[in-house]
Picture 1 (cartoon, one colour):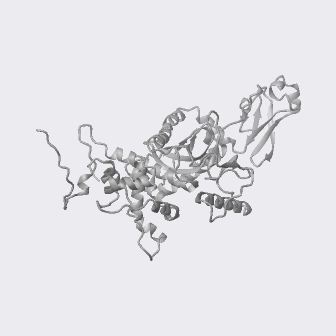
Picture 2: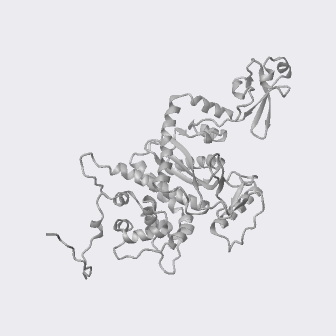
Picture 3: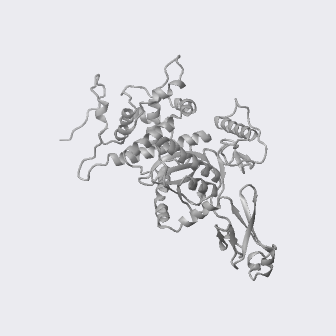
Length: 466
């Protein structure tokens, strides 16, 4: 006969074990088995007052944030709602069945104050990377570097040209993103006055084309065949063995910032994990002479195409048509004549190698070489030797292998946007971009780590000891 379930839900006592309600092979169990947050209370203690009401446990907030990024729950309001009703999320967050869920607003204050001051989110990320290294997923021999644009939480309508004065509101009336931007401008101005580097935005002396009034640190990105938008860069440094992200950083979206953060990330990985790659793969954006020289000096083989804009489009000889003789410090033109340098350095970085006017006047290739000048001259960067090293490497099989391995970092970005839903930032300001990129990279590493550690044998039921 057909059974019919009674609708009554008025039982007074329940015997309920939350641990038994979460399946043994659930992702939260696997992640809990590799996540170490025992350090949090000790490290964050100096950032809390010794008096007043007890705060929300920072471990609880970090665990909830990890749930949000691992399962692509982009809104903290929705995250609190999901933890309220999802037993697996409650178990992972160490909450009882009757425990209350913190309000979504507590995340904002913790993120803007204690987590950023203590760099707690980076510490969580580095702890996961250390677990990946211990599991043998990081080879440490070959790294790949790349950046991907992420749309900022800023519309195109509220913007103004960057070369015009802007009447910003008073600090007490401004949004957090605007206050952060103005503080960065003050710091850059102070660095210029005291002889510093003027900040790391790579735009000293050159105003941006457009400035967002909502998120001023977002960069205006205008490219062919696409609508312009405000964006930040997500920068990933990965180990080529298993695609583990060994460092991640959110930056303003410009080429100079990408180059500068590459050096920062490689140095940080070396200091934190004692890892320095033998080779680094990247696309042409990273082929600037400054980075190539930096890599060569540290004995890191640059498997990177050279950024070279010396090719001419008017049909005349380009610099590549001239042969450089390192032993004699001369260039040899296509007609066999010599170009010498006086050793004078122009613009602080460039030497000029000039041919004799007499040789050029009598040369049959003059109209193809220097039709508008008395003689031909060739600029050469003081560190052009690093470019020559990269050019020679581009012809090797090892270079081609690195190009194939570099696809792993591109796959990380595809997962970041398609699976983890980070195609548009939710937080504003450069600090917000840094937090979101770091948490997403942490979630990606966690899922990859437990995939390797908890992969069941082909004929066995999948389980993972927590």
